[in-house]
Length: 126
Image 1 (tube, rainbow, N blue to C red):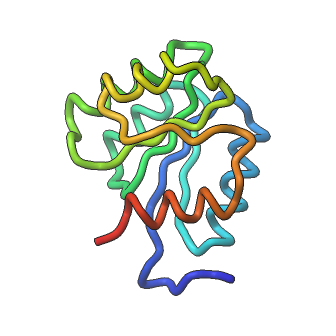
Image 2: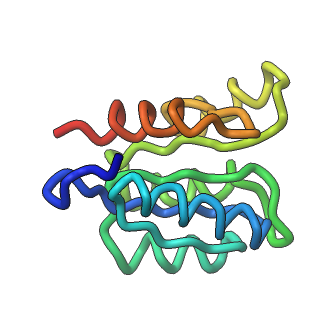
């Protein structure tokens, strides 16, 4: 079921995998949201600086650094937009590191669509 346009949220998804970006773009668009994607920290940071988003979804590993570094860089100019890490790394220290760089949580891959929809609704509620 597609959400109404009035509840559409702008989401930035940054993941090193083109396929993951395509899949997330499809899923979030089907859920009624507007999504932008990037595959590097540099691209993600440029989008975050030049556009307004309701939610950031970040992977943890990139060719040009880590998602934790990206989160810190985003937090330097935006302290309020929620950040959720999307990763297959289930170690406790990943969740601790995410919290230390200003993220609100970690969503484990493979991502369950219902869980993703709930996370988006929870962290973008007005």
